[in-house]
Amino acid sequence: MAPAAESGYDRRVARGKRTLACGFAAALAAAALAAAAQAGSISDPPGDLITDAPSSLQNADVDLRHVSVKRANGKFVFTISVTGSIRRAVGNGKAAPAIAIFKAPKAWIVQRKGGKYGVFYAGNRLGANVAVAMPDDHTVNITFKTAAIGNPGGFTYHLTTGACTVYDVAPNSGLAASRVARRC
Image (tube, rainbow, N blue to C red; front, side):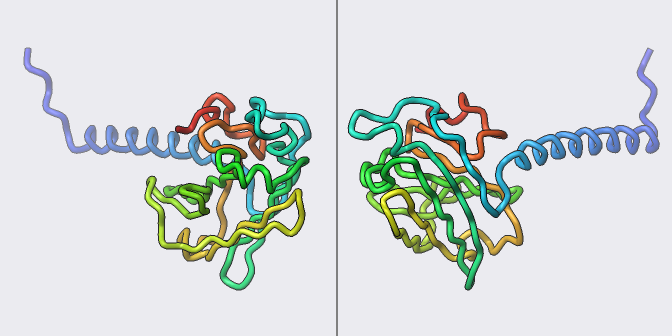
């Protein structure tokens, strides 16, 4: 016996179910991203490293302590503090802080690559200038124009210390250590 022809009503119901399922999946993805930090300020507990620092550094050099973000004069300023020496971590290159910024449906990475910081989208360095200043031995300010990431009204972010191997992450929730332990 041949199957009955699908009516217009049945196709609309099936399309509605698919739309609902896609909407639910998008809501779950949004909830996962919401677990990342909002623009503002967060503190990270001391001694919560995912893995030990490389032998050329002390664990404290990659142990995040505090991260804050502010928007001023068309720029974002990320202020990152570690327990030890941020100068050693940034100088090492492989232990320098990296920032993953999420504004659905896009994501950017601000990281040190090729000896200098840049803003990357889909693996490509954008033309954005990134200024790096170290006001003291524990703190680095990473500054770039808001236009580099599309002038978002808001975003979420995750910050890590480390390039291929991640040593610490802030905030601790919303990004599984197993997913970030090796990025390269």
